[in-house]
Image (cartoon, rainbow, N blue to C red; front, side, top):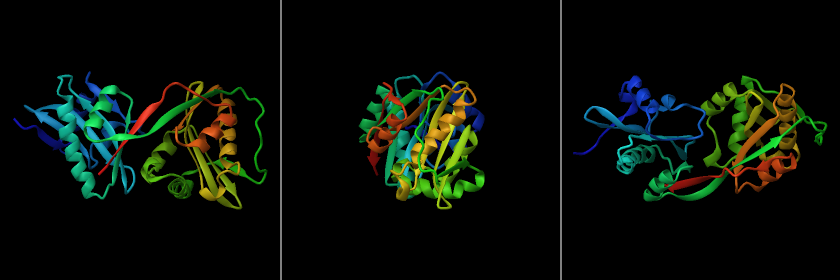
Length: 280
C-alpha cells in the first residue's frame, strides 16, 4: 500500500505535537524556531498510515537559494529509510518549484548521515564548537573610534543587510530568523564606525554559561578589529552578570573566524558536526 503523504499544515497541530513528543527516532536542526512553528511552511510533510502519523519531515528555505533540513522524526519500526525517502522526495518538488538550488543538513547521527548519502548528499563542511572560560582578564582594545552599543529592534534592517553581505547564502539568515534570534538572545550589540552600523553580535545566556550565537561584520570593515571588539564587549557584559563559560560555533573552513576566537582564548572542543549538501 503506498504511503499517504500530507502537508503538515493540513493536519491537527495537537496530533503533530504528540508525535514530536513521543519516543521516536528524531533529528532536530540547530534551529531558532521549534518544530511546531515550521508546520505551516512549504516543505513540511507527514507520512500517514491507517490514520496514524508515522513520520514527519521539514526541509524549508532560509534564503532564496538555500533550504535546510529542519527536522525528521520517525516511528521506531525499522521503516525510517522508506519514510525519509518518501517525505524528502515530496519536499524536493516543493523546493525546486520555489527556485531553491541547494539543500543543506547537519548530520550529527550515523543513521541520518546514511539517509542523506542515500539521497545524494555529500559532505560540505564541518561545524566546530569552541569554548573559553572568562573571568574578567584584561582584553586588547581595538580602534578607539569604534562605538559599541546595545542593539534595538530598529537596527534589524541594518543587521539584515550586514548578514547578507557577510555570509555566503548557505549561512545567511532571513529577517524573520534574525528577529527571532534578537528576541531570544540575552545580549545583542552593534558596532558603529563613521556613523554607520558595521557589525553586530547576538548571544544567549543560561545560568553561568553563554553562547555567541551570531557575529557578522560588513566586508569593508572585516579584519580591522570590529569583530574582536564586539566579542570583547560580549565577554565583558555577560561576565559582569556572573557568566564564566562561553561557547561559539563556526565552520571548520572559516579560518578568519577561528583565528579571531583563538585570539580571544577560545579553544576547540571535540564536538564537530558534519554538514552535508545536495544540489537540486
